[in-house]
Amino acid sequence: MKRALIPLAVVMIVAGGMSAVAARKAVVRVAPSTARLYAAVGLAVNLRGLALEGVHAALDEANNKQTLTIEGALVNLRDETVETPNIRIALRDAQKREVYVWTAKALNAKLRPGERGAFRTRLAAPPNEASDVMVRFASASEAPMPVEDGF
Image (cartoon, rainbow, N blue to C red; front, top):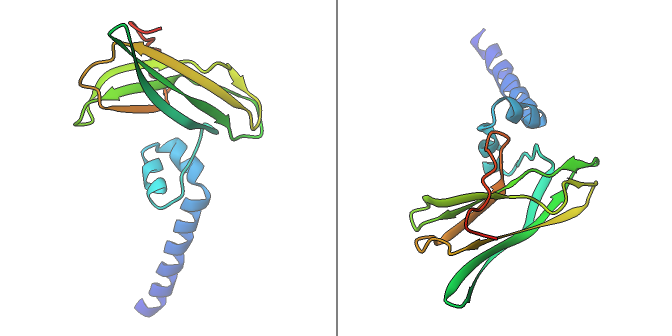
């Protein structure tokens, strides 16, 4: 009897694993923290249907004042028009702690299928302890935080 249960258990484990892979978008919608697990095994889940590309930061100095400029592109990966979310920018220190955070808007409020839209934001006098920039889409629960001393 126990021997018959082993193949059945293997089949159930394989079927469960296949279901978890096939339904990964649904799983991530219900349990967002599972997105990291899928990404760790090379199965990234993108519920927004948008990607950030070509993001870069530049620090300029004029008249003894520094200005940080961050720009890049949003790309619509879906087959339908999507609204562009706010973009969250966080400056982090050497220990990866956030020292300054703000949001920026894309230049286009909506993107058609396959369309690219640019974003650009500037911050005057960025904190001296900032050594890293993290850019991602702002979640719906994050209130817009416009740059206070920027442009």
